[in-house]
Image (cartoon, rainbow, N blue to C red; front, side, top):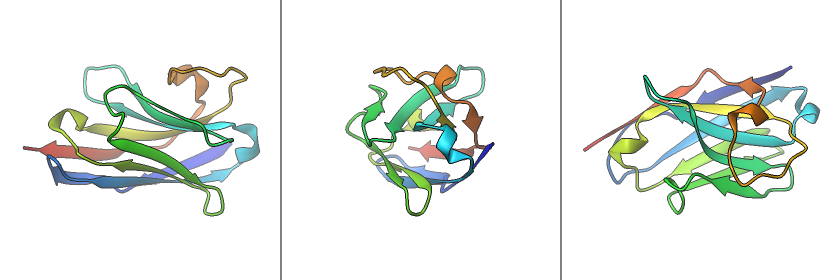
Length: 125
């Protein structure tokens, strides 16, 4: 089992920044990727960013150039730096971990088995 605990959410004015953190523990050797997803009520959970064990990253088009995912393996923590936030970024953000033998450009929910409880991000104008 892998446990994920997110923190860092909050309310911020449009144009501002937040950094989300996700502390990872447990059987991390069974995973080869980490990711961030977000969800608003009534909509599907969408992939925001992912990072592989080797450090390669992928981003949703809507956040490219504004969000950065990183992984501190010493601290077992995954970060999502979010800059130039817009109202449309408002959502519950979830950290995820998983394993997949496939290299894909897309960020697919089915490639992630373990999920955190989520942290709320609210961007106001």
